[in-house]
Image (cartoon, rainbow, N blue to C red; front, side, top):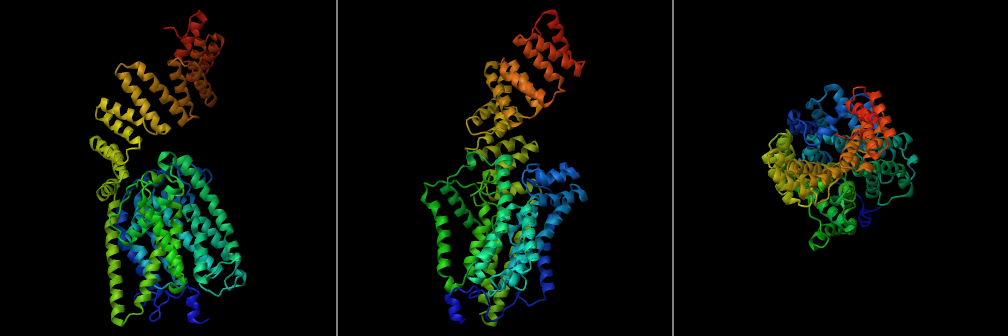
Length: 640
């Protein structure tokens, strides 16, 4: 086939193969040396993380492993979804092993994260080189030191990001051995190709499953393979699709578990997650361009970013998805002139991002629709594209221009490394990270909320209250913030102000936990103000919320029964007391209170039986003794 015909048909290699100096690195080095430099870059940038502590979600994702440190706990991690908030059993198993070694000393955890990032960098380099992408080493180097990766590497909870990337890249490398994507003329039958052994296929499938068990966001891997096939060959055949059906099936199965947990266990339900299809498209379009901008200009970076106000009635918000579609259209139309590579890279970037673009609800969207760690996997594609184009055009320059370009690339790496090195210190501890967040993005409500949480736990109630008030100003429809302000006002002894905040909270959307907080404290405040009649409705609502939260907790049911009895709601009281006894038959106090209730209803025999059961369980139960004596004397046990 002639070169002109290749260009007309959109050859994958039209614009990515250098014509003058096809080098794997800016300076020709043996692979071991080039790899050593990549590892050294990672070490230099991230060694300060070894002195960092646990931050943010580490409290339950990493430190929570301490409660599951036994073999039975490890079994629960794997076979009882919901034992931990997210189903990432492979990542949590690594944390489980780390805990066996060093318990909760954070240095080892950070060291493992750094090593995993170095492994990802090496695997990315080798994958790009295997695919004959120019500038493979440069792309891996930029990926290694780019500041947007700091959140993934320096935040221990994101070991799931790192581990899933390792297995995803290994799966791609194994699949290429099974069906060589790096050979455009490979046979349509994989078993007829030199590497087409079923063992490589099974290895690729197994590694992909491991990636999913570390983080289900890697569900996009089989789609990435299809894009790579199209990039290299200009077509996708049915056998190529058929081979990936098991990948899609496993991915969808495990991803459905994640979606269920996000909604049912973590709580990604409610008005904060309710968007129309148009609204979700607007979120996705804006998020894609946000990530592109942060790759080009990674400053300022924050742990949480402002949560956008999505409004389909505002025409300007359609610019983002429209621009993304226009870019895809231009790249498609120009594939015959510039090759399929740019379009393939953009498709992979957007596709890998898709699980985090707002089409599926995740709890984090309460705080922001974007996060640096969301693009850890996806940004590999765009970085590789820019590096390939840079090396391609640099190879056509005269010697002086080529050396100048190499020098510019070195400067870029140094600047990115310095920025990342500095950012690592922002994750030193919770206070450093949270104050950095507020300083960089004071318009992010979540930053003020999170800082308020830390200040509250540190008993800095005045500043915590002010941070919550600022968060409320930025996100006024988030009613739980008023509960937080109310609690801080109570800590400061400002009862009237606290009461106003709890009442304001009840005007918004609250889950049962937040309803309990608001009603319970209003009950206490009103009771203390001698407003007993007003407090009755709040104690009743608090108990109802408590029962809905933990319907199978015998103590909660018993307390509810006793409370409803005091309120004179006998039917509700009996329902809860009998459920408490069903859950815990050995509760003497539950039988005693049920006896009091039955006596009030006039069922003297039933009451006496319950008192006797209570005394059989606990002979020292004074209330049951008194109640039984009064029944025998013909008095009501409820009489004073």
